[in-house]
Image (tube, rainbow, N blue to C red; front, side, top):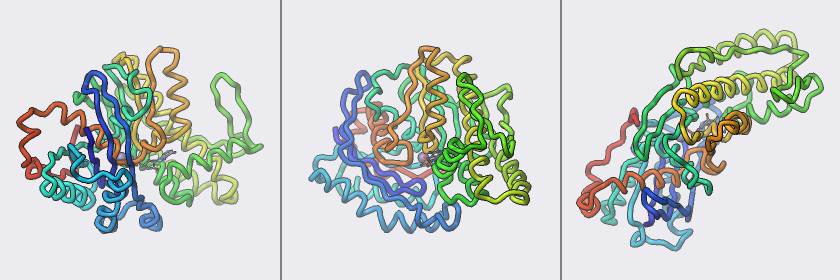
Length: 368
Ligand code: KG4
Ligand code: ZN
């Protein structure tokens, strides 16, 4: 079947058409078009997302984005079997644009519509991976994005248990806020990561052995905390790390030029965040014995995180999967894929009752 996905929960206006088949037993997906308009240029100067500006940009871009997703395939509404739209969690002014546009399409085209949880969408970004037939349940998923940091145990399709989450800032938020302190702009994750690479090639770093794959900053001796790394649960906390970076930065900037300390700080920030994420994921692996571990969300694009997790999980003979880079940040293909599994659960009556658009509502705080 052909599914049109629509995503406007945050700062990307996205639409995609996928072909889905195989049902629960042998699901497979072809992404036929995947169009996304990023609002980074709009929000950059504010150092974060401004909800009303996001909403206005979604309104301007939703029609051209959906039109492009359809026109790239020479598909018209006749071929679409289902509309899947993100209905939460996210920013209400943003969600409302996608949800109401999708409802209007459903009514006009007389096609069923399904509301998708954005986090569930991120989880299903892994099913767009060519290796997805290796996914076995129970699966453990680390969701790391700008708004969420969660460890989720997935018993089967649609069955989730949140076993840990952040008590304050999300991992991506920590990247974004610390990048702002360092004057690195928005979004912070890719900027911190690229600046950390400069440190790796600098002479003031000393390789400390292949075994622990670490290099040490021998000049500035920057050390940041690893919040909650030893806590007896699967929760996270990143706001203290941001405060520690602020104090350290204010101290160092009195002694050294910013261009010198930036790479060292970025390197240690990335290490601190990644170490906490990897350590908690491994703790959950030991306790819950999943057959598959997956990561998802914008921060899943982080190479260090992918490498460290892959390395630590490999000896356990558990499948480790990360989405293709094009599906880590917000996109509509993952929403369409998640919509397929929700659709499979629906009754024949639901599928033929074309009033589903009446029941879809945005919910900024939607839980899994
Ligand atoms: O999933 P996403 O696109 O939006 C939300 O649902 O929040 O995630 C965006 C987040 C931002 O915080 C951004 O800084 C982070 O993902 N991010 C990264 C990288 N690429 C994006 N963080 C670390 N390393 C990256 N390479
Ligand atoms: Zn997201």
